Image 1 (tube, rainbow, N blue to C red):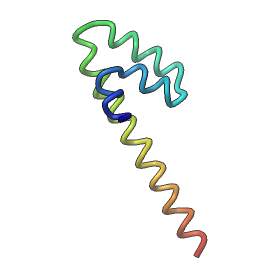
Image 2 (cartoon, helix red, strand yellow; image 1 turned 90 degrees about the vertical axis):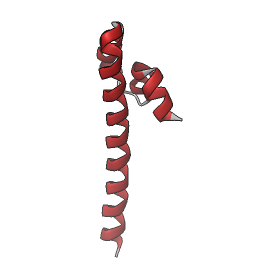
Image 3 (cartoon, rainbow, N blue to C red; image 1 turned 30 degrees about the vertical axis):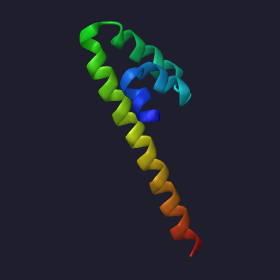
Length: 66
């Protein structure tokens, strides 16, 4: 679901994750038709990186627990 939001509404994707300044910058980029594609790619990559960071954090906590 968040991936679709990141593709169609890149600035909203950042806004929903609490990144206000990044959302504003992304909105400025996506205002132009040419900037929409880089904004969407940036939002999807950022979302995937956040998910990977969460997974890595969980693995580190699990390894420390043992």
